Length: 452
Image 1 (cartoon, rainbow, N blue to C red):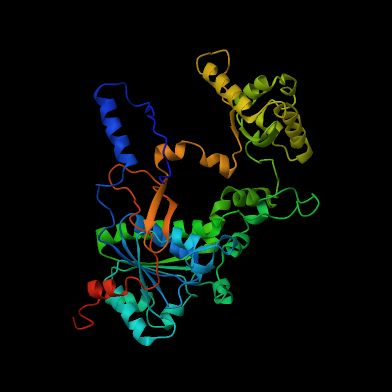
Image 2 (cartoon, rainbow, N blue to C red):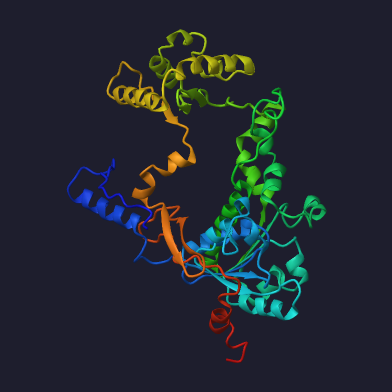
C-alpha cells in the first residue's frame, strides 16, 4: 500500500513572482524540487570508504555522501558493525537494527577484518588508492599503527580526504588520556557541557533538577554532519588544487559548538549559564505554556511583539511591569517566572488552535495597520509525533519514501532532507546485508590486484 493515497493540488506561493512567465518558471522549479529523478548526482565520481565501527557519527557522515551520488563502501568485519544491533526496544528487521537500516541508503557493503588481518589491510590500502574519501572512527592513531592511516594512505594517494572521528580528536592531553574511550552519543552530549544547560532549575526537586539529554542521537548526528561538511569542503579544495587533507573531527568539539553564545555569555558574566527550564536568557516570551488541549509554544520576544501578545490575551495590565526586554529577562528568576505564570493563566483558557488563530489574525491585521505597531506574536501547538505525521506537509514535500528491498521487505524512510532543483539527494536502495557487494567491489576496483 502506498504511504500517501490522498490526492489534492497545492497552491504555490512565492513573493518573487507576479504571474506570467515568472510563475511558469517557478512551477517548473517546484516540480524539480519535488522529483529528484532525472538530474545529475553531484558526487557520482567520488568513492568513499566508510571504515567507522561501533559509531553512528561516521555512518551518518557517509550517508550524506551516498545520498548525493558517491559510491560509499561500508567496510566491516564478517561479524558486522556493532551498530547493526543498536535499535529501539531491541526490535530489528531480519536481524538489522532500524537506525542502521535507515542509514544504509545507497551504500555498498564489503567485509574486511582491518583489526586482525594484514591481508585485509592491504586490500583496504589498495581500495584507498582509488578513493576520494576515507572515514574512520577507530581510536586516535590506531589506523596509523596498522599502516593504513592518513600518513601511509596519502603517500600513495595525495588527493585523499581522510576524516577521522574520535571523542577528543587526534592530539592534546585529553585525547591521549581518553584514546581508548568508546565514543557514544550520550558521552558526546554530556562531555560537551550542553546537557548541563538543558533541563529545569537546579533548585527543583529530583529528578526535575537533573540535566537532560536530547531524546535522539543529537551528539552523533551533529558530529556526522560536521564531518560530512568538512569532507565536502575538502573535496572542493581538492578539485581546485589536487590536494587532499586530514580532517580531525572531535565529537566533543562538534556538539559543544552548539552551546555557542552560552559559552560567550559565561566568559562575559564570569559565571556559567545555569539551567533555566522554561525561561530564556535572551528572548522572552519564548517558551511553552499549558493550554486547554496540551501545550503551545509562544515567541513574542520584541517589545512590540510582546504588546501584541498582551492584546490577544487581554492582559494589558502586565505592560507597565514588563514593558521592555530587560524587564522580561532579569537576573531575578522569580520575576521572570511571575510573568510566565501570568501568561499561563490566560493560555489555559484556549485550545492551541484557538491561540494560533488569534495570533495569525492579529498579525494579518497588524501588517495592514499603522496603529497596531506591527507586532507579530508567533504561536504554535506543541505537536506529538502521532499528530505531526498526520500533517499533509510531509506528503506535499515528499519527505518520506516507501522503499522495497529483497532482504528486509517494504518500509518507510525519510527522503530528501534538503530540496535542490538541479543536483538533489536521492534514495536508490537501502539493502545492507553483510558483505553483499564483495564481488562487485573486487571486480570494479581490485581486478588488477586480483590478477583479473
